[in-house]
Amino acid sequence: MSYPLNEQSTESVFGKVISSYTRAQAIEDGVLIDAGPMASEVGFNWPVALTSAVWADCVAWTDGDSQKQAHQDQSGRLWDVVYMASQAIRTSKDSSDRLLFQVYRVPCDGHSTKAECTALKLIIGPGDTGKPVITILLPNED
Image (tube, rainbow, N blue to C red; front, side, top):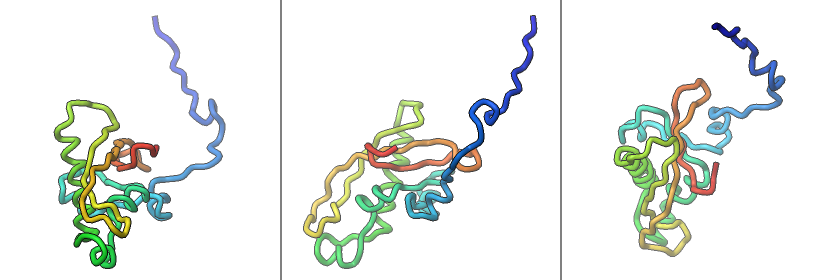
């Protein structure tokens, strides 16, 4: 017995798209920050971006912060985040599209000098062209 194929388009079922917000637009707007070539250096084959909240909490660092707190640099802090994300993927026994991992970072609060552990989440999903991309978020972000 054969069944006729249902050839309905998404638009015919749901209607026209009212609004869309692409990953490229989010990067352009600063909602996401591209990890750039450092993600490739760590071993990622897919584009990696961090939310602006992750960037502010775990990466952002100025010379002024180094003078008040501990000597660090933004590049090294970015390396720590993407490296720990790559290690979490490599050591995970889970095949989910979401993964929690931890990274130690000195909070950028004007006085801390010791690293503290913070939890982050990564999601692997389709990008603007349907190819896989990785996004690193705070655990409460979607």
